[in-house]
Amino acid sequence: MGKRLSESMKRGIRGFIASSAYVDYGLGESVNVLFEDDLVSYLHGKYGIVDYRVVYMFTRGEVLSDSRGKGSLQKVDDDID
Image (cartoon, rainbow, N blue to C red; front, side):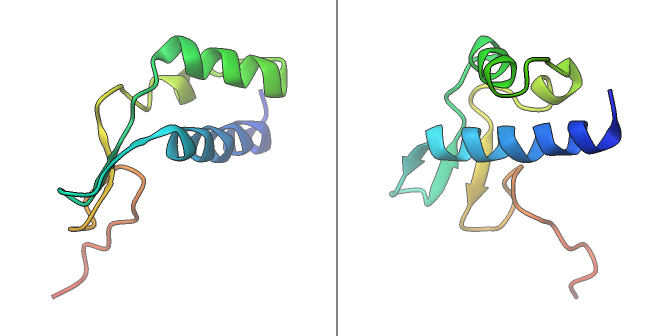
C-alpha cells in the first residue's frame, strides 16, 4: 500500500470520526463514539481496502478535541513557552 493512499485514508478517517463525534458542550470537547468495525466498514466502502494501522490509531471514547487543545485530532505545539 502506497504512502499517498495511507495518508489519504488517515485524512478520510479523521473527517469521518470528527463528523460522527459526540460533542459535550459543557466540557467543551468532542469524543469518538465509533467502534473499530465502523471504521473498517467506512474505509472498505470508500477505498476498497483497509489499512488496519490507520484503524487502530483511534479508540472509542478518546477525546478528539477539547478547549485546552490536547485532543488527539488537534495539533500540539510543544515549543510554546
